[in-house]
Image (cartoon, rainbow, N blue to C red; front, top):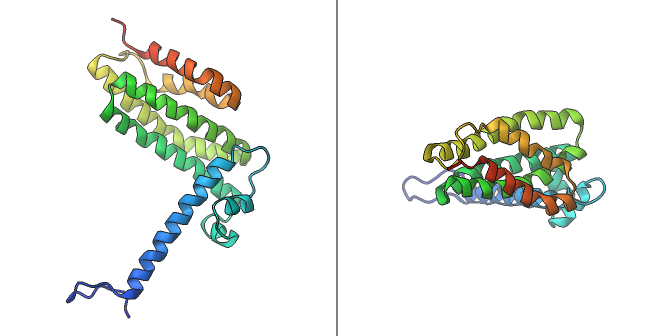
Length: 199
């Protein structure tokens, strides 16, 4: 069979269907690998690819086809975390007033900070510098989206800039889990209060 649609019958050949199923399986495996790696990167010691494969129930060969090296995997874990963080900003604004959306986004920032801290500690300096350089723009745009909405409706300070927020939240990655749990929510709440417009 050719693998192309039969334009007369509207049916898709078996080879095309099987190809689609393989792609879907590959995507599911990729997601499982990333989820497992995201969880394991917080564990003490060096992240082992065989531990990731075991955690998500796939063979090492499957893992290596997706991520040939440990750094490839860790870099993608970080990129995915950035994508999720950036995508959360407009979703939160659609459901909440700007100050509340910002507060909820900061909760997501705390989770991102853990991943960033542990990934950057585990990869070569050149890799984390490249990851940081490419993530700063999208994260800054997400912050600006939240601040602009608050400036527009008068709920957030008119003089607050995205760079201000990025500088202030950068300390999160310097905290260990215990201190991040203990101080993070309170400090982020103080930051939100500081960004609110004064009556």
